[in-house]
Structures are given as structure tokens and as C-alpha cells.
Length: 128
Image 1 (spheres, one colour):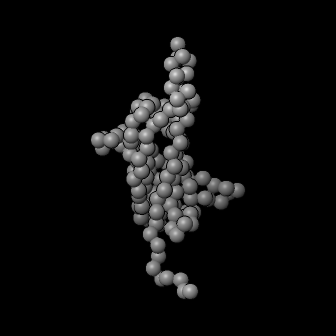
Image 2 (cartoon, rainbow, N blue to C red; image 1 turned 30 degrees about the vertical axis):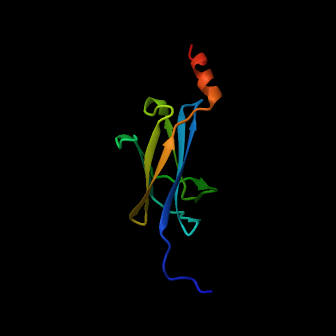
């Protein structure tokens, strides 16, 4: 079998994790081609939109995570006080853009901010 001369498209992927106890969203974003991480992107921008398309928050990072001094190509962005902007149960969209070799690649993901049932009950009691 011979390898194709056509390069595969670059995909931008992201993972959003909300911690209800700290009210913090941790976003990991990366670009890959053919299932392999691109280890030298230079910037990541994440823009959060409401369901109606209104821009709610924009965050950026120009420092990818490293492992033993070697760049991984994965960006981590931490957003504090999330519920000052987003409401529990709301659905939001995020545009994730990564700058790689002078070109911007992006994708859009959706996210619904949810609390575990027990946290929904416990939080008001803790706030008293």
C-alpha cells in the first residue's frame, strides 16, 4: 500500500469540563491531522455564544501545555466564575480557533451547563 500525497484536513477539537464546586470551566483544545496532535500551534481563541448567537465571553492562550519541556500542542484555558455569565441548564456554543503555521483552523461545539442532582439540592443549603 502506498501513502496518499493528499494531506488530511486539520481538525480542531476541544473538551469543556465544569466544576460546580469551584465554579470553574477548564477548556482543553488542540488541533490534529490524521489522528496525530500538531505539537506547534501558536495560539488558541475560544469564544462562547448564547443559543441566540450573542457573544458572551472570549478567552485566549498562546502557551500550549508542555510535558518534560516539550510542547504538546494542547492548550488549557481556565475560566473562573462561570455562572456569572452562564446559567445552569442553558445551552451554549463555543467557537474554538487554533493558529497553526500562520493559518487559523476552527470548529464549533455546543455545551449544556448542568449540575449533578445532589449539587442542585445542596448548593442552596450551603449558601444560607
